[in-house]
Amino acid sequence: MLGHIFSGNHTCPTDKQQLDADQADFWNPWNEDWDAHKVGWVVCGVCGIITILFTMFNLISHAHNYRVPGEQRQILRILYLPMIYGILSFLSYRFFSSYT
Image 1 (cartoon, helix red, strand yellow):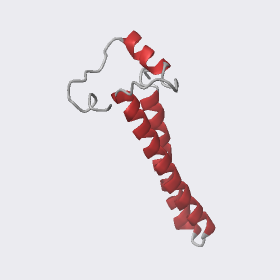
Image 2 (image 1 turned 60 degrees about the vertical axis):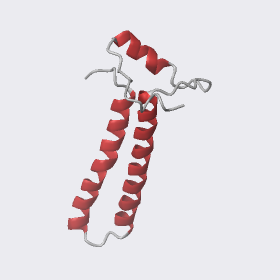
Image 3 (image 1 turned 45 degrees about the vertical axis):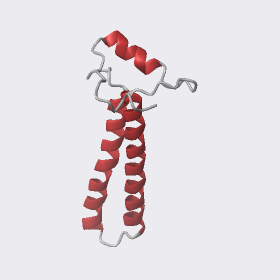
């Protein structure tokens, strides 16, 4: 089933109309044609969710044990970066044809 994705013979479409057509039918539950973009979208989503979960765990742990405000305030600010990056990476992969 996924053999054609990893065979090395897959070329990405360059026509914008073809790219838009590929995005429209992703949510069709009976569509069994999983191309490289759909597999990548699932992988990107799973990695984004894992990043958000780890970040939230660390944020809650630091907020629960908020004993050194001067240092932990900076740590909390830094901990927001992976979560924001994960969300933005997922959205940019999902809406790849929406140029900036």
